[in-house]
Image (cartoon, rainbow, N blue to C red):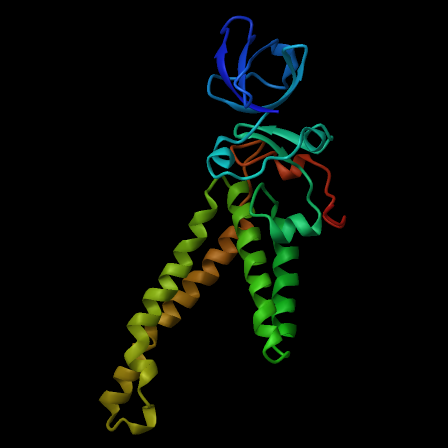
Length: 242
């Protein structure tokens, strides 16, 4: 059952949960891994009018209407307590390349980046279908960048900065891209055409620097607001996501 903590005793940690059935369920502090706060969204088992086996849920996920994991999933050993609630600590290939949640270390990032780059090259040889399937590798790239930025303590939205600079550079370079250099007369005209491509060159170098930065800076030690430290958990990258 889902519910919301409506009161907590600051001394004992005991409190009351308002269930989705609009009933009140008292709970003991020992019924939850980690201290609960007022307003915290939770999932719990109701036994004889008392809440037990309480798990915190991410408030952000609740607001977005995302389906939280079940109690059975959260009770598994891969359920990890974070400031935003319990998250799964599964780091299989499916999780690595699909989910933008959580954190990954530098080794996992480069491993996934190489796999996605090779996949893009191979897909480029497949007419039509390759372009369609490549959307999946694009999402995989977004996912690994998000998790790597999370590991450094940054929001995954930071990766939008390079994309925005590419858009600006393309807009600035449109006159040069639209012109045919063979149709230009005089050295000055050709020089202006070449200068029109400078924004693309600058942004290309800057984005390469962003890639190196994301893939080389060490992550934060210990858990942060995005999840547990990936260096402190077993590496199960080769496992299939179930």
